[in-house]
Image (tube, rainbow, N blue to C red; front, side, top):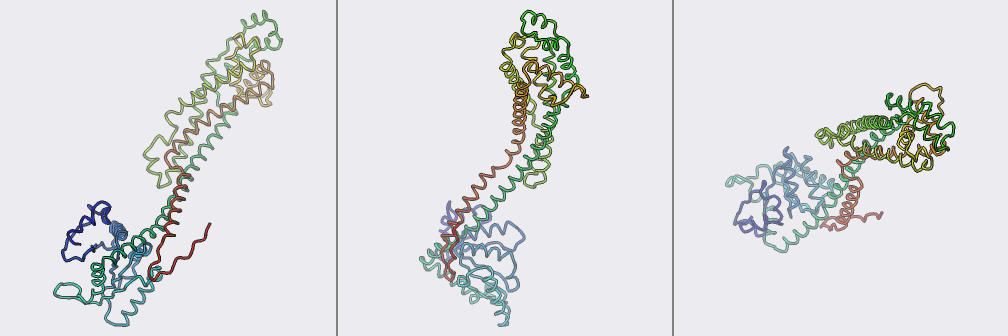
Length: 477
């Protein structure tokens, strides 16, 4: 280019500005045509991927493309990929075929084959000028091709240098073609975004399946009550099976205030604190083991995906329950037990043995309902074998004496629902650790739709180049 063309080519916003400082070297020549800059790109068939990327970027900035090949390599696939990009944006082309054979028939066959390849690539033949150069057409004085051989190329460049309006028209055509050529690229970006949304959904499903499966397994263990430690059950069974407690409710003595007070003084002390703490600890430990297994299964599945392998490998905490799991669940469980106590007071607040804070008081009755949540008889009889079954039977009979069978069933149902909600919410937080690592698929699909709409607008704005038939109208959705 001419020395004064540097700023117009390399300044901010100029055609080659994004390439400045990389691999672009500016060579000034006072003999260069006015308003024309020649850019020599690297070989497009190079095995170096960076060369192909740079060539593609140059094709975006160019107003005229000169494709130089040989009679023996013109059919190589890589250069035709670049020509396809030039076609998409409507870039005018000169195709220079070097080292052509001397035989006229052979030259004609090569030219015909190149025209066939151009047609197969959907490159308008009227928009392409073929420049064949015979093997050995050299000028010894300059150690290069003779002037006659490159005359068509020089003529095209000189014509642009001499005609400002022609340069503007060519630049306008190239710009319009560049904008229209963005349509397939934008469409491919939309496809990539849609594919990422599909992959994101698959990752989220893997996590959801793992946590749901472990939550179901946890619910099954809780419903059987087998996780409760035997020592805590024995303490509670000794309390609810005591003769004084049984006699207190079997004789209807609660209606006589003085006798109640005497009877209550003789009842054994309910092991409220012990059973409460043991049950909380067992609940947390059992829930943690299932949450850890869900995390491990999710991390294993994600590790099989190349896009997520490094993420899960670099974050060891994803392979188990989070550090905050125990404290988070315990807070919810303590609120759950407090809710049971409130329910007990609302349901049995008119009964003196609850209102007066006796040994069988609100806290003890609340622990009884808690135990019944896991060790409900569900049709068991006293003859059933097992500490959990026996404790459940005696505990239920005591609670039925306190509240009545119907009210007890409702209280247990409410307690189970609140417990399930507490555990489900805690598992959801654990699963959310994985969800935070991937984008929202809904947002991705919305973005893909916007890209496709933009691609359609660009395609509709595609100009009709000389020799190129109008694009057929697109079917409306």
